[in-house]
Structures are given as structure tokens and as C-alpha cells.
Length: 92
Image 1 (spheres, rainbow, N blue to C red):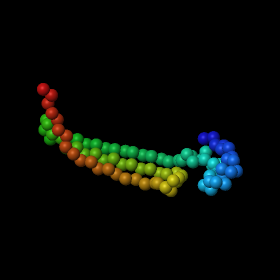
Image 2 (cartoon, rainbow, N blue to C red):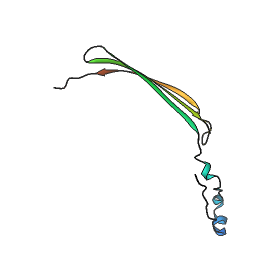
Image 3 (cartoon, rainbow, N blue to C red):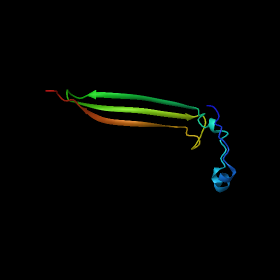
Image 4 (cartoon, rainbow, N blue to C red):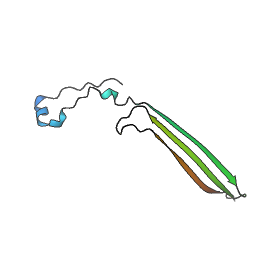
């Protein structure tokens, strides 16, 4: 990203607004983030009869934060396990 060049505010404006003394010099580096994201999943379905099946899914998520930004280093992983039933209906 290219640097952002902000014009200087008039002196009388800066005097009346203390918080207006920002430095935008490094704004172009704010989105210079590096990360690795992995998502893998496995699903199974076992048909009990013509109308009913048991299902199971496992999903794994991994994020490696190469450069912490707002909330610091967000590296981590988690797994999600889902089970359920699947009903098959007949279209008449």
C-alpha cells in the first residue's frame, strides 16, 4: 500500500482540538499482515435403513499469526465435532 499524505490542519484548529495531533506516517503498514490459515474436515454418514442415517463430522481449524496487530498474536487452533441424524423422505 502507498503511504497516505495528510495535509496539515490550520493552527487554530489544532489549538482547539487537542486530539487532532495524529501522525499518519505509518498508516500504509497497518494492513501488512502475515498469517497462515488451515481448515480440514472429515465427515461420515452411516445409513441405518432407507429413511434414517447417523452422521458425524470433525473440522479442524488452525491459524498462525505471523504479525500480531490489534489484539496481539492470535495463533491457535480448535476442533469442532458434530453428530446428528439424517432423515430421508419420499417425494410423492
